[in-house]
Image 1 (cartoon, rainbow, N blue to C red):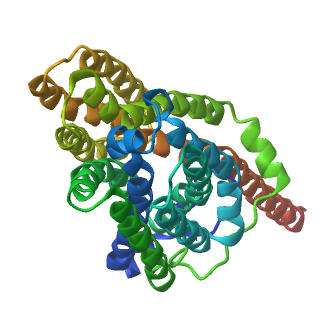
Image 2: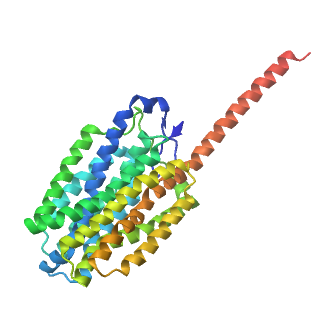
Image 3: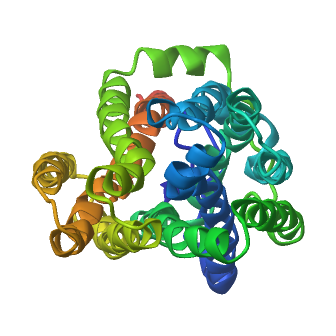
Length: 381
C-alpha cells in the first residue's frame, strides 16, 4: 500500500489503497489530463514571450540586453510563489490552489497584450509569475494522491506539458504574431487559461478518498529544511532548470540576432527541441518505475548529457545543424524532470513515513509482549 504525499511535505497523509485506485481506474487518467492541460497552458503563457522577444522588443524600443527582463520578472514572482505554493497546496488542497493560480494567470496574460514599455511589461510578468507559482506543486499533489505504483509514469506524462508547451508556443505564437499581432496571441492565451480554471472546478477532485488533506505543521517544515537529500535534489534541480529556462528564454532571440534566422524558423527549431523532450519524459518516467526508486545514477547521467548537448548546440551555426541537434538537446534538457520529481517525492516523504511505520511496529511489538506476559502469568504454577 502506497502512502500519498505531495512533493513538498512529509507528514502523515491519507493512504491510497489499491482498492480505491481499482475502483476509479479511468477517472484518475481524466484527472491527469485536466492537471496536464492546466500545466500546459501555464507553461505556454510563460514561454510565449521568448518566441517573439526579438521582433516585439524592437518595436517596443527594448534593447537586446533587456529582452530577458520580462523572463527575469516572471521567475522572480514564480520563485516567491513556489516558496509558499507547496504549503498552500497542503493547506487548502491541490484543486483550490490550481484554480486560484489559473484565474489570475489568465487575466495577467491577457493584460500583457497592452504592454507598451519595459516597466509595464515587467510588472505584469511579475504578477504572471506569482500567479503561476503554485500550479506545479498543486498538480504533483493531485497526481501523487491518485496514482500508486505507476506514479513515475504519471509524473512523466504530466511533465511532458512543459515540453509540448515549447512546441506549441514556438509553432503558434510567432505565426499568430505574423498573421494578426503579438497582442492577439497573448489575448487568446489569457482567455484559454482563464476558462480552463473553470474546467478544473468541475472536473477535479483532490483524492479518490473523501478525506481532507491534513495541514502541514511547523515540525514538518523543520524536517524538510533539515532533509539533506531534499536540499541536494533542490540544488541539482535549480542548476538544471537554470540551464533549461536559459535556453528557452534566449535560444530563439540569439538564433535570430546572431545568425539572422527568421523568427518563424527559429520557432520551428525550438519546437523540435520540445518534441525531443515530449518523447524522452515518459520514457524516463517509465525507467524510474522500473528502477523502483534507484534513480540516482539515471538522473546524474541525464544531467551530464544535458551539459554536453548544450556545448554541442553552442557550436552550431547553420539552420541544418540546429535542426539536427535540437531534438537531442530537448530530450535531456527536460528529460531529467520526471526522474528528479520522483526522487523529491520519495525524499520528502520517506523519513517520517519510516518513523511512523517504526512507531506502529514498536506499538504492535509492545502489545504482543504484553499479551505474552499475561499468558505466562495465567499458566504459571
